[in-house]
Length: 507
Image (cartoon, rainbow, N blue to C red):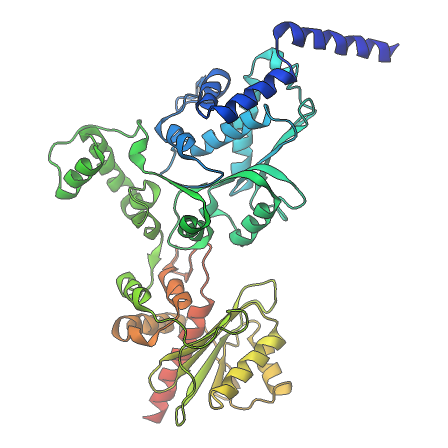
């Protein structure tokens, strides 16, 4: 009896769907219109989707200038560099939601930088569904599952998911048709590895959008932006003046820089007034949070420990390696060992595992400090000791200086027991170099002085890039910016510190 009643209920609902004209076929027809007429999605977003405005009220999603420009210029794969609160996350969520409810058999996935951010995006998508006409929600878009982060539409066999970039194995085991990577520059952990896993899950003809505000000249988003021009990804840049709400009281006494900006981009006196407010409130972070061009905005994050101009000058002139790259490009060589010269091999042990941080080795000339070779690779402690010993033997039985912090003691033990290598740096009768809070500032200062006074001794672009992203953090601690590395830099700092110490001993 209950089965018959359920069947009657379903028949009544189907009849209601037919009467109102909303069924799966009509939704699929809308999906075809979106494919054939790109502007159609802008019309549908305004007709059916609702968002919260800045005052907290509900309003139709009417595309703003940045959203409309993205829709008109997008490709299959896209990367978006933007100022704050341009509405791109909202637009991509809306676009992919409309795709999900008008295309059978698709999975749309949005990945945010944190669990909190992911939940915020999902609340927005939930609102999209809640504000649809009732006959759609109770008919072809009835959901079989709607928990925190997942929304399933069995009538279309389609699904919308929200993930956090910090989720273990994010995207693994899925086949994704529409992928949105939100605030990529602020993803935790190894963002490049997380993105690679998600890309592997993207269907061959799937659509990808990576977007973020800048967060320093380093990390996954910065690298993806740089590579976009060569791998077919469409680049979109939206400066702050694309947002019509970014205005304030008009000014009249323009500076030369303000006049040039007004002339170049057609800005108004009210927009310049807003810009002055940004300078007062955000100071050096204005160029990052409210980007004006696609170069300087990347360089505004953190206080670089080195003279940036000196680092960038050397980056522009750094030589290519002379020998063939070894170990699949991990080991680069610029100068071979020469008779009568002495060398230092410095080792930063990092995490001591193939899945951890990189280990690094620097080989320098003891007299001049010239960088001769560099290795950056994920290695076990035993393999790292073997590679270090091999390089030291190649470079005239060089002294090996191993940072003995953390895993360094293991490398030192292997050098002695497995490699039987005796020429190992020691201080006060203890083998290895110890980096401490007391001597690290001096090591960094020495590197800073060498970068200004003798930049030609540094050859590696990997090393120089790490110098560019080695910053002073809140509290005074020094280290790599989020998403960057400092293993090559620290190995070189050890090498130069040992060199300075041994030269002092000779004198």
